[in-house]
Length: 209
Image 1 (spheres, rainbow, N blue to C red):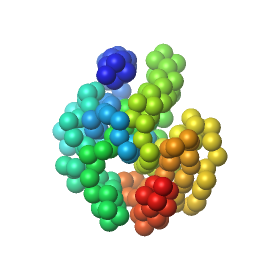
Image 2 (image 1 turned 45 degrees about the horizontal axis):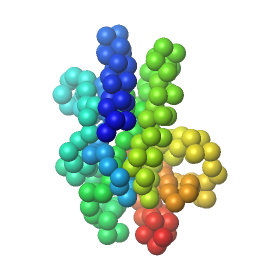
Image 3 (image 1 turned 120 degrees about the vertical axis):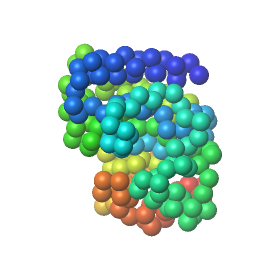
Image 4 (image 1 turned 90 degrees about the horizontal axis):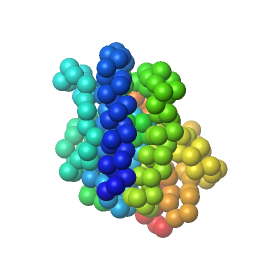
């Protein structure tokens, strides 16, 4: 896929530049967490965490799509909760799902992410490139349902789409664009705060559509 190869090359240049700077808050780059294909569901997080770095004591560099959806083989909290949440509403398979992040740069937390972005954006135009990457990924995947893994992810997509949410509750958020519905939820670190409410929104806006 041409657009995948293009973004791999562009993000790799940025990765090499940050790696050479030996910036301590940079934990690596992970571009795709699944195969990339036209799929029913697209998961969008804000950025990768530092799990790989903490476990392996080195930064991660993973630019190619995975051969299978990452959550299928992982047991960390967000993966486990997502699998359980979907299984309980009869959506136990992620074979028709894609997962990306708004920003592919791994950090310990979201505060460090924005520090990193602001340090390197002037030279590398990271905000613009990341926005284009997400927009093209959505266009290619053409999902019916987008799951925004966290309020920050939902809010960023809301700005990109320039639409008003249908629902903007304390812990769950919903908006539509064309035939796509995006459902987001509030997180406490990797913990999904209102799983039952998220399930209800998926049933209401996706499974009954």
